[in-house]
Length: 162
Image (tube, rainbow, N blue to C red):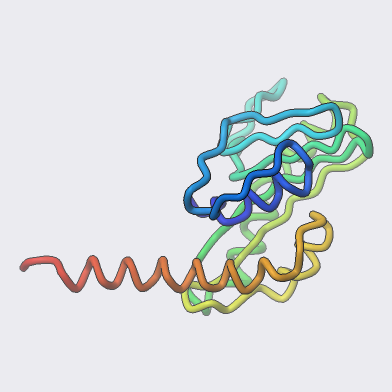
């Protein structure tokens, strides 16, 4: 799952629980909640009307600020980074609109976190991390994870028997 590398730092940022684990060892629950935050992981969000795209990688609701962040992660090829970011934003606009009304939120924001399969990050990646209150050093960890994932795929393909 592509959002795995963000879930543990986001969990620490929200203060749901602090764990000292590597991101690849951590398996989240579908819903984690405390008095200030609610975080859904890879869960369909119910709305009053039918919304085609209702399952972003992560949904973070900040109860204090009455804001929701719909976070979707992608690892496309280098030439598709900008296109993928635009697609993610447009894909979840209906869900963002419905959530703002249903949960009586002041704001909802779709945040695409895009790193190419070769480690190229989208121009807004750092800005999006700041908005999510995630540490900037996570960028290097995400790049490493994307590249290792690419290497793993190539390795599996190269070891396939004809």
